[in-house]
Every structure is written in C-alpha cells, then in structure tokens.
Length: 97
Image (cartoon, rainbow, N blue to C red; front, side, top):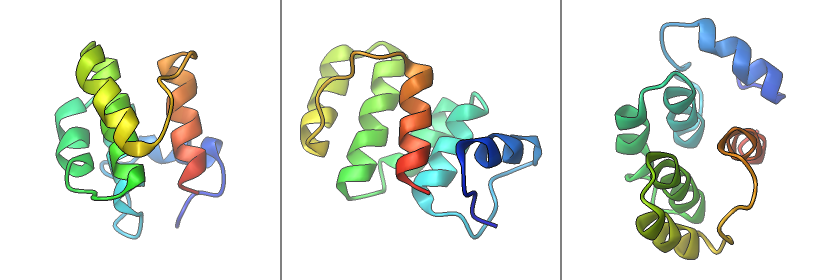
C-alpha cells in the first residue's frame, strides 16, 4: 500500500524493506530513513528526473558534501534548503505521496 501521509511512511519503517509497489523515490527515501545511505543513493542516482536529482541533492547534503549537493539542487531546480535534514525528508516524502 502506498502511504497517504508522512506518518504512514514512518510506520512502514517497521518492515524489513520498502513495499514493492512503492515508487523508486519512496523506496530511496525509505532506505535513507532506515540509515542506509548507500542503498538510498544507489536508487536515487538511477532516477533520471528532477525528483531523482532532488533526492540525490538531499543525500549529498546529508553526507556533508555541500558542493555536490548544490550541483544536484540546481539540476532539480530547487534552492539549497535553509531547513533541517529531518524537515527535508518529510518534504520529500510528502512530495512523493
């Protein structure tokens, strides 16, 4: 089942993996929320859209690579965020519901 809210997304973190029916962006964000940056990044870099670029940017921001993150935010057409990583995860999840 595709989550209808951020809270439903969070409840899916109790599962062993992201549901197969979820979109690739949601799967990538699931892995990130579980602390598996590498799996999240592997999925994000294969999403060739502005959403893939945005998730890619977020992940590089999270890793502390501001230069690389800035490149991907520009590719996504998004400004470099002024808010927390936790808030950005929520915004990204909600943008994919």
